[in-house]
Image 1: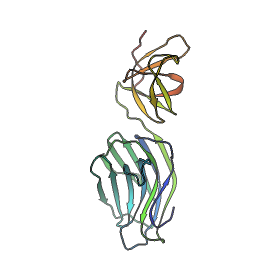
Image 2: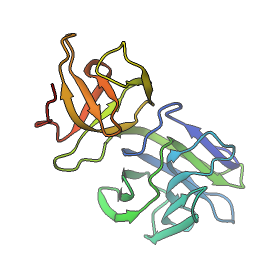
Image 3: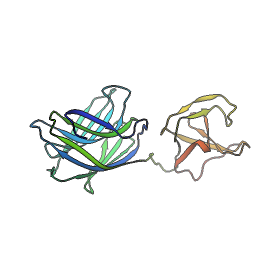
Image 4: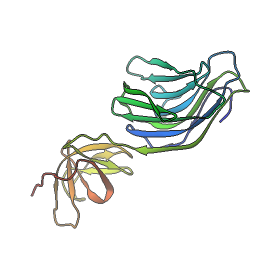
Length: 226
């Protein structure tokens, strides 16, 4: 992308995520005499314009790595790591956002580890903050993987689309709510009621069927109920 002012290009519209690994190659041509930024955004809440919840990570015109973590419910904060980045060369960035912690790799080197962030959901993309029409922020080979938080002994379901939660292990029972795309809930137990499917009881007491979700985490020894 290349533009003046604040520009955000969504790469995952409708794919709200909390825990992801995102990477790509950034080339930043900063032409303004004022402060500019080029980077990747994750956990962007696009229900507001402008977005109030987001995590913005990248390189700036001061040749540093920056971290901007905004929240509508808590204090926004900004941080940076002095690196003397060579803006004449592409920079390879990897972001690992798991729960309330962040790790950042730049050009294969771990730069930031165990950094506290807000645990919110949102889409992702690439952005530029500039007041010059001559400046550009270009992203190449950008990729994103879902990485649900893994805890020993904890199994979760993750929804690949909007999934109905049922009050019991049957489609004839009442709908108890929904799992949104990418949302996870912890599994408490499993049962086979005789319809040819395994149903999972979730932490809130609702049930989902095996063919409309995926299991993530430590799911080798789930309690069984009759």
